[in-house]
Length: 369
Image (cartoon, rainbow, N blue to C red; front, side, top):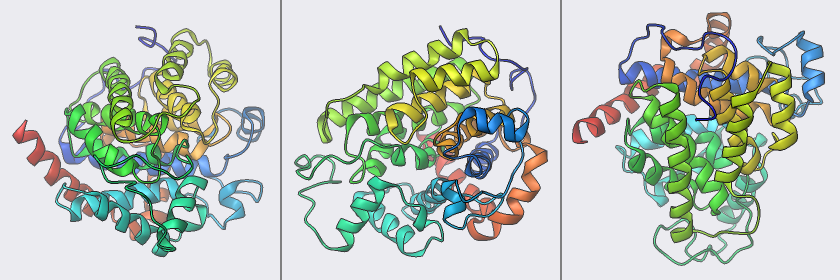
């Protein structure tokens, strides 16, 4: 396939990692957060500005400056933004629901995050609109209820908010693409009710689910492709298909770029020009999966490349970090960043407790397969 053997560096192939579900879950949660915090200091910058500032790829935490979204909202060095924060709240909600998250529980989780998370001020446009509507008690005409009528409000959900937080849907369904995508659909509605948003979220969830089994890189990428296709089918049944780029087409293009790339900067530049790296799901999600493939799943290279890709860098690195961390496990977490990241974020989110709860569900779901 086009993405096989792409990128530079050894990647994670051939390395020895602990392979328990709990270990992979911890790796995914923490690497997604490390990527988020790494990209927070480069968000909205161009590739040229990032390479000049860091002397190459962004591989160290820095204090977000006022011209970044995090810096303008009081974000601190090594601290996650709304991306990973929503992921951790979703993980808690899945554990609290004993793996049976429904629409009411997800809406309650989203409103809880909006009311109580220090990162709610970072809220993206799609999530902000739906949270505002829910708070005001506006009728949603069946939105968010799987199997009911399609949404009648104007389409808003074409951004990457559903995909950025969705990794836990894959973490609790190791090897089960259908289970992961069905849970991902619940987390997409009501805020991201379009085929491009649902397909992109399902692609990430499916890739994470297969990465949890210790599968090879190519198999994880194939799972993301399959998950995206399943997501598009689910969207045709439960949401809407507005005009615009199709996720599967953009993902195929992005993986082709990763397959023939020659050098980090040239790869990122071509990816940005052809696919984009902004908040739209049709840009950032294919780009994140392609960067994961290009980096051969190597944890530090994956998140550093995402943080250096320009545009919505923190979201790119959150999504790709979730994939890479599930593949590599805790032993693959970059030692140069881990201690500082945990010191800043672990007191609030409790990664050991989150990993324990999700692992219990993953073990149970795996035994039923």
